[in-house]
Image (cartoon, rainbow, N blue to C red; front, side, top):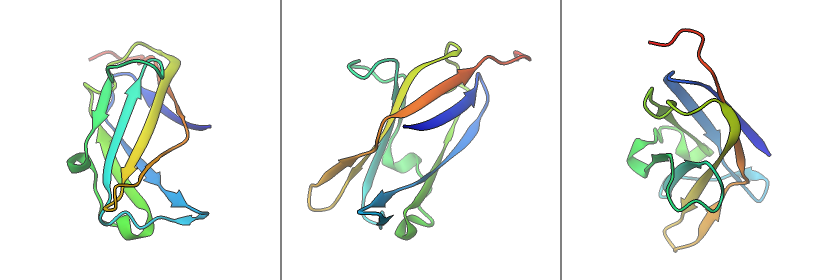
Length: 111
């Protein structure tokens, strides 16, 4: 399982490398969706990043990134969060990442 560690109320860039069949996937024409939920079965996501939120400058090489804002990371500290990346290809094929364990560390300085 992959892991993402974030600090409570801190803006953080998140870089993802996507592979398909052991090779880096070409994400040029792929629609991306990233969500963080408390539990897998939850209907509502706590954080959602839509395709327009991603920087796809190097998408042809399977590398994309987005920024979690301070509002996105304003979550209760703990490790009980699950993230997932969904890739929708032009032909309608949908691939989902392995579960991403999201750990929120408590901030020492609260602003």
